[in-house]
View 1 (tube, rainbow, N blue to C red):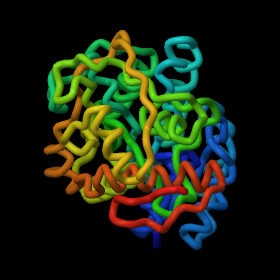
View 2: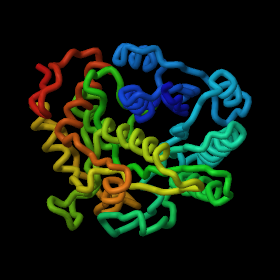
View 3: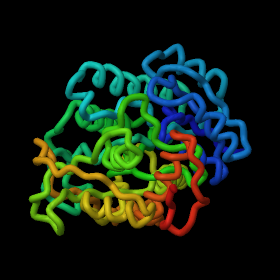
View 4: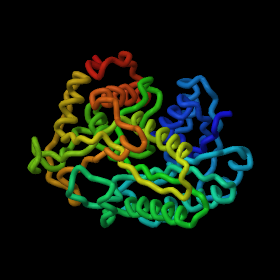
Length: 356
């Protein structure tokens, strides 16, 4: 019998890719989402890609009644991957209470229902933001948490502590926190990808908007850092690699004989790319020119942030396998085909995807 896995926020970008990865690895995912920041069309797209009709329950993790309905309809759930959360750093600074009330309450509600229904295996969607303004790269899990740079980061720190203390409570809970670095790319079909309801804020979607004319240019914030070319360095990984990490995390929880188990893992590539290297790689992949506008440094931006991923490789048996070029190619296909209705060539080997 396939293990049923509840995926909160399963209609979002990372959640939907993880749903596919779960299916490919013999799990039965159940999507729970309120579609507040995701497109309902993703459900049909997932069915088209997988050939499977995935169970979906519409509801809010902040509402216990909604969550209780999930467990009533699916009494054999054996694990939870908790993605459901607001995730914009800028919005969290502008409206911190929205983030505290949503991100914290949603997790504590999920934890309550897991305890009530004796579900012991939990994977938490955390973030490299828990490290604060660390100027030490590669970042290792043993560095611990730093001063949070935003309310969003604080909610991720709090989430990890809630899980850690629940494990220490001795109820037999096994939980992992995955600290993501910078997910990019999309499914190779071009049918699912990052689709925020508001304007994108991350580098690669903003870059693509500049190329397609949705914005006049890509602002490069800071060109005088002490790096290879003067721009900031970050760790970018393919979203499908990130999805695979969640499957490895679940496998690890089901296989370990330990109870009352808590651990955290960096999920990145283990190498950094500068902003200008991302631009150059995109131009090589697409044969498109990125209009750029050099700008001054932004307050709070760090010179260099990338992960040490030794722990994930050693314990989870996971490592990123897809190239940056492939991530940019897949992301460009999604940006054009799914958002603009433009057909682009089938997936190649991470290069030469162009639009006349």
